[in-house]
Length: 525
Image (cartoon, rainbow, N blue to C red):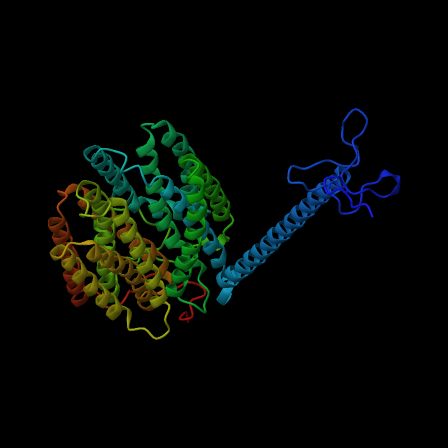
């Protein structure tokens, strides 16, 4: 039998088709002209993939990616919608809780709830204004800034020293006086915030005069609000509780207003100032819509026994008579609280310039100021909580105790000047200022007849604002030496404490109820 030649390829199957498994099996036959047939293509690695199969797979992959992206987008939209609904529910819950808080104890019936809402909006606008202007002092040379702020404080003190004896009698002679007084202080700040929005951007010389006007209006607002609170007080709560409620509402407004203004200030300080303008306008409307009983002084008498609405324009001797007519406990706590306000005003301005001129080693000035301000805010909030406790010491004892703590803290700061003593001092100053004020409210509520209470409350607030300005003036007038500054304020606070002790030993023991009592006075025969 003939053997096949090993050098010849084996014969293929009939019809000339290549044998299965032979080299080149499955390879597409070349089309006429040498081009590959439309049914396939040769890959460099020897794998055979047809164009008709590759295109559907590519389309499937693109379609799959599109479906995945669509599912991811839908999931993101659902998550965003869920987050929005959750935030909306949280906002509605917070609004309901705040509404229940301000309406509690009959405050919605007397109008105290409206005043509380207005105060929260006012503080929100003040926070926005403060954040917008936070860098103005640090942006100026120290000597120039101190000179401008000195003028700032002199003009701020003028309304209290010169106009305070005139404002009360004038307001009492006009209907709707107090509502319009509150509304005016808010409307003026709205206008000045709009002016400041342009002044900050253009570095206008109107920057400090406009800021001065805002501070004067803010202090005037505090006095007018102090006169309004007793007139809207429900019978089930006292002045301490009402003022604690106003403080807590103010903290809520400060957080909200400060947060929004902080975000807007990243765009530019003029944006946060225009936000403050809008909030002040809203507060102005709320002030004008306060109940008419805010303006009523029916049956009230002044501190010295003069019927309200018949006073003259005031004189220095009148102020002396007012002070001597106060009960001993009221004068005692009033002088202690004046020390707290003096310390607060001194700390704000003295520390602001001190940190710029002589910062602590290893710490930036703004960082130290932020730490002290945060501690003071915490102390203020803690004072509101302590003042609201049902079982608390007598107001005189509590005010004396916190005054002693603050005095020791100031002395320690003078001796051991450091970041930590400054932070502790900020905490003590905030606690002292808030708690002493609540103690003053308590003794006025306890020892002053109802038909005299509103006038005592308003007049005492004027005195406290003047001492804040005095403390700030001392802070910018003395050399920027930590030991000197904190030693001096220690002596001043201790001196006011000594005056308080002396006032408790001499003078009237109770407010003489001159004039007829108020119609709803339970002591009326």
